[in-house]
Image (tube, rainbow, N blue to C red; front, side, top):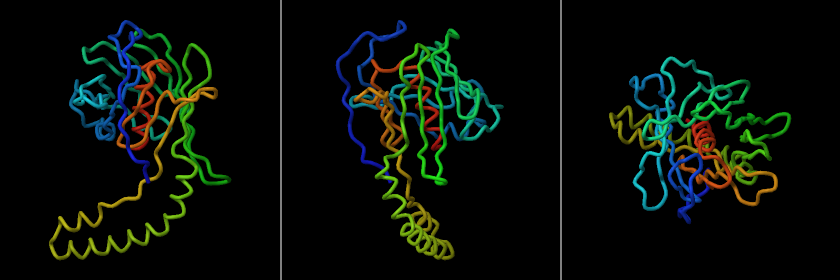
Length: 245
């Protein structure tokens, strides 16, 4: 179950931090997850995935490239492999490495610490808990915290899940019948429908009324530039979409 998408319009321009070109106060990026699933199959020297512009009036222009070593071990959701992020011109932007259970250290291209990103896993028992991400900038201040999905969305998801599994069983049986008849296209259509768990995530500080990062659906993220270093935002977006890869 996903919340519906919406268009995010870029706003007024302002000077970009760290000597970068001026950037919109509000930016929308897209992070494809296919390359993250198959990082060990990417050709040497090629980026694993690309952080792309996704707002109105853009054409998917690259904003940064993500590189994961081919020989990196499969660490799982709580320990993704280390990766680096570079600008389109090849300038190093950041490096991200796991340092503990669900904790990642983020450094700038010059090795200066930018902050930490933490993933706390979800669970059902002994009480329900959603997956929670937090971003703690190195310069201090309150962390930005985002829980995956809203409590209402998860309640609806749990209530309709039994009905989904009944429908899934019926459609799977129909797909198997089409496959026996040699109709692979029809069989694929029958098995294509999936019930996705809630995904809407908004990262905000305890005293911040507006989110610094917002994810709704489609691997697209809205970034509020003044509230968070864009390099930390890229790292969090990559880890978040990797979690759903």
